[in-house]
Amino acid sequence: MPGLIVALVLISSLLLVHFSMRARPMPALRPLNVDKYLPLPEAGQASTVFSLTALFGAYFGIYLVLGIPALAGIAFGTVCSLFTIRSWIQNHGVQTFEDFLLSTLSGSRGNASSFALTVSAVQCAYAASELLILREIARVSLGIRSDHATLLAVAVGIIGYFYVLFGGYMAVYRTDVLQFVLVAVMAVALSIYSVELGSPVAWTRGLWPRPGYWVPPVLGTLGGYWRYAYHFAIGVVMGFGLLAAAPDAWKRVFVVTTLRKKTFVRFATFVGVGIMPFLVLLPLAATMPAVPDGPVNAGQLFSNLLGNNFLFVAASLGLIASFLSSFDSALLASVHVGLMLQREQKPVEVETPRFHWLMVTAMFAIFLLFGGLASLSNPYLLANLLLGLYAIIAGIQTGTGAMPARLPENSVLWIVVVAFVGWFLYFVSVLSLPKVPTTYEVNTVPGGVLIFLTIVFVCKLLAKGGHRNA
Image (cartoon, rainbow, N blue to C red; front, side, top):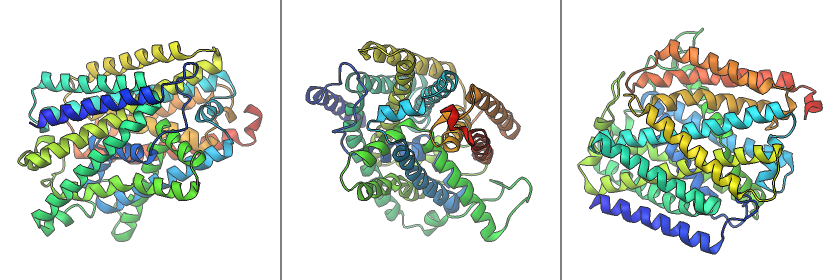
């Protein structure tokens, strides 16, 4: 029965794509040049952020071991990031989102190519990491055989691929509304279940950080409010960076900022809905058993959900919905940035063939990466590594005001290479590439924060008076 319900929901999503295509087909000349008539970007933003909180595991894992101060910092950083992206868009003074991407990729060919390829590659890797984590949840938490879990992940990924291929932004935004409803149903179900538990221990267990995580490298262990302030600050930068480096977030902010009446009120609503997923973590964590330091067993974490059919269906639909929202957005963002790079270098009148080839290339790269890493016993390893790459992209965007063209020729390539090598060496020194998921993976976040701040400082120095390079 649960499988039938999930199948019906996915079929309903495909029907939404079909009717979206009939109502507003993709433009033949510029298939992704669609800004108007996109419904409720708030819904997609909430679903994508929830994927970061639950399925992607970054925010959820941090909350389980670091509690309220770190989570509050991430939520505040998310808000700051949305306002910063809004400022970038207003400062660029563009009329369409594609104009914003072209403005970001303007200037020297070397910087534009390096930045665009980095963003596209990171978005493809993010989509692959979501496939790996979805497969792990299906295998460990839902009890599906390993080969069947792989088929499930691949099948859902293919469905997401055809969403984007046939419907573009219109299909993604319309299905985001349905996926947002499913995530909201899951949140309500978990909240009701948490209230029924009636255990004050469950509600207060994860409120405050544990020792041994996010320890300042020079000052050593901080006590009391200084410790909470440090964790809050680290969370702020992390929440800021993950959205500042995400083209799908740029797109949604653009739609709300430039194409809606009463833009500030609508934008404030957009921000409010975007941080709602953080509140979902409170009841979600209350349903989980205590998580000890060290290796994490995802099956034990979700054991309470498996004993209740209603919770099982609600959680399954919510997780798949959040997966589709973030997977589709990452895939489309990767293709769109690549399409703008090709237009900048060699414009053509009709871009639909390019769009189709880039879609095939991106999906092939995602499945190739997924297949190559599926045998690893730690499906969260790729996601953990991507934190550093998001910090690099966000640092470049923040340091240049979303205009890498302000940097000297080929400097973006060297910044990316040097920063990634430094991040990888730091990552190995902290974790030594853990073979299984472990709570100590969150200890890599301060390193990503340091890389972000360093790149912002370097870019501002290089771009000082650097409008001559734009």
